[in-house]
Each structure stands twice: as structure tokens, then as C-alpha cells.
Image (cartoon, rainbow, N blue to C red; front, side):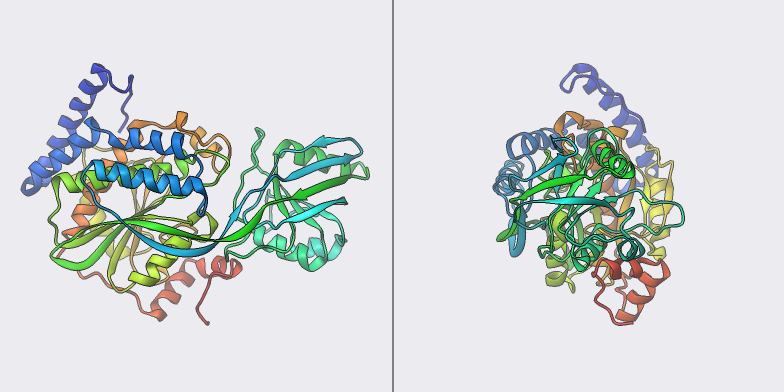
Length: 480
């Protein structure tokens, strides 16, 4: 469904929303006659009262990047609790302790054959290290063969993040581990995207400091260094690393709408973001959409068969620590999970391999005739977001196929993920659809929500070859 926006508070926008709401509501009325009034109210409010947009602006502009354990993250939590209170929604904090990480005043500087301070971003859990200068060596993609055939002892490794044809994609954590074993001093990754981006991220998934400093360089400067090495120039780089890990208390933010049954449908989005930007799309979008879902459920549909629990997970970027904590604590209470991570305008539904839910989503798609679900329904599971800990507990989990503008993907984990790119249309689309989806699921009382056994979990992940990825990340707790 395409909606063109005018100025946010203009009469043209209001008229447009009324028209869109009317068309969609008519489509719903024929399929959901018993819920006609509630559904119409939810969709109408989602498009004409976009509280999520104003909340997102405040979160981004007043708190900014929200790395777990940081003052900015704490500020963001305060803003969320305050804004939830304004709309009459009470939330609680479920606190937990993590080994967090903070970026210091780091330096990566070319000192030979010329001198230039390089644009570099330390990867999460990169350790503190005193100033040193070392020779640079190019390690291709950083495979085991690369490290066995190219000497890197006491050198700084330059590694491409592009994957050549016929070569398996290398995870940064694997490359860093090989560099440490080889006796290297540091690792510099060349970003695969051009445009002066550094693409920050975590260097490991276990929350422990890595053995050597690791940084992401821009595509342009990284390839400049590579060309110098290809010309047999002696390249030396100076590194100062002041980033370091520290113990921190943080919290998931939880609000609950009690149902007839104590069993829970969890709808979640990670609240934290990387520190380089404002974290608008990743994952201010999911955070803001969940905020509006809370408003819509609270206002129009508090009474449901299953309990609905909305969870803003913390510390996702550092290693899914918030969702791991929640899933471990509430495993026996949860029967299904919906995850929103960089959620755009929904174009379809992903049952994530839980094929028994395909009929449910087919009916939901048919009921939502006013929306353009051009991608339909697929069942392709993936990991490395907050649904994964639930799947590893055998709990059916779902995501959405969704559209985002190219710029929103381009600035992922980088300086440009800022509020100026926010689109209220996306927030309205997602809030309307996911609220109705949640309520339908929470009243799916005649369906048996089956939790997988340990054996079924292992079989499920092996079926989709996800066990291999989790093993490489050291995130697989099952014995084969």
C-alpha cells in the first residue's frame, strides 16, 4: 500500500489518512464482522494519531545512540517510561547485568608511506591497548588458509569483508580469533559498502573482550591501504585503543495486558542501538512501532484470550543479551513471539519455518485486503535477532517481510541512521498491521500452540542449516 505524505500536521495529510482508513476498514468489515468496530478504530487511530513519530523524534534527538549500559541508554529508558505513562500504559523494568562496552578516544593512523588519520570505528568488545606502530599485511578474507599461508605475527591484519566467489563468508569473530592465535597485533576490516561508512558492530557474541583491537575502516581508505600493499609498499599504521568493556546493569522494559489465559504472546523489539548514530531505523523503528501497539491495545482491545506482553529488549546489539535473559526467565509462560527489527512497511509475513501457522497468516492476509502484501507468506527462518533465543527454546516465532527505503539500509550501523530519514507512513503501516496481527494471535484460542522438544529444536535448526551458523558463532548449546 503506497501512501504519500505531506507535512505532518497538514489538512491534506489528515484527509489522505481518512481516505486510506475508510478503504481499509471496508475491506476488514467483510472478513471480520464480529470485530468490525475494534478493527476500524485501531486502523483509523494508527493512521490519524501517529504518536510513534513524535516519540521516535524525542528518543533520537534527546537520547541518541543507545548502547546498553550507557547514559544515553538510561536516558532513552526514562523517555520511554515517561511517554508510556502519558498514554496510560504502565511498564516495569526487568533488570539484569551484562559485561557492556564503551567506545573510547581511539586512533588508527597511517604513518608510512604517508601520514593520515583514518576513519575507523572500533568493534564492540575491542580492548584497551597502549599506542603501538606495526607493519600492515593483507589477509584477503581472513580464512584459515589465509592465516596459514601469510605471516601476520606482530603485524596488523587488513581484511576484506567482501566474499569472493567460492569462498564461504567469514564472520568477524572467526577472523579475529585466527588473528589472535597467529600473534597479530590488531585487525582492520574493510567495509564492503562505499560512501565513507564504517559499519560498526560487535566483534564477538559472548560478551567478552577480544584478544586484540579490531576496527572497521571505510571502503575507500581500506582499499587505498590494500593498493599500497599490492604495490609492495611498506605500510605502517599507528593504533591507540581506549575502548573497553565494563560491568553494567541494564533492563528490558515490559508492559503486560492480562488475558483470560496466563500464557503469553510476546511482541518484542530491541531498544538499544549502536552509539555512532541516533539509531533511528535500527531499531528506533521497532521501538516506536511497539510504543504505538501499546497505545492501540490499551485504548481499543485490553481484553483478549491470551496475555499479551510487549517487551523492549536491551543489549541486542552486543549479543542478544536482553532477549536471552527474558527467554530464559519466562520460557514456560510464552507460547509465541513476534519480533520487530528494522521493521518497515509490511509486505508479507514470515512464519520462520513454523509451517503449522501458514493457514493463520493466509487468513490474516486475506482479512487485510486493503494492504499490499506483495511478498505474501514465506517460511524462511533466520537468526541474529531477538527471536532467536525464543526459537532455541522451541517457541514459535514470527517476523514480517517489510519495505524500507534504500537510504535506511545504506546507513545501517553507521553515522547516517538519523531521525531525518524517519517516515511516519512506515510507522502507521506497521503499527496498524502488527496490532491486528497480535490481537488475532492472542485470540486464536482454538489452536494448540506446540512448543518443540529439545530433539525437535535440533532437527528444526539442522533442517534450515542454522545450526552451522550458531556453532561458528559459539551460540549453539546443544550436543549433537
